[in-house]
Length: 160
Image (cartoon, rainbow, N blue to C red; front, side):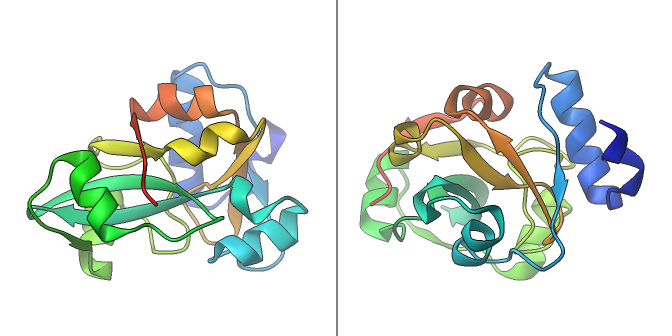
């Protein structure tokens, strides 16, 4: 992974987490921002549904990470039921930054100050290769669903 020295600091933390977990992948630096699933899919050349969005929600006041397919929007009623919460809402940017150490648009599934309770959209299983942000809006990484499940210890749930 010779690109490591060129990676932004937050992406280097993500890369170290991947190495520690035994996941062999290469973080790619994109020339333009990939803050949205559509931007990322266009830059990578993949189906938008193969983008694994890292979204931070507040579930009963606790930050949780929901990895959703870029192919649909998360349904709050389905999410609430799927994770067993009473109330769920999008986390404000300040909470996302505090919980992940990363900015919205670049939140990776790992590399956070402390592990977040994580849930994986069951629709992500439909893709042989997924693409997730790697800690910065200009970095992405390919993963299999199984690699994503292992590194996040995420529970597989319906989100839409």
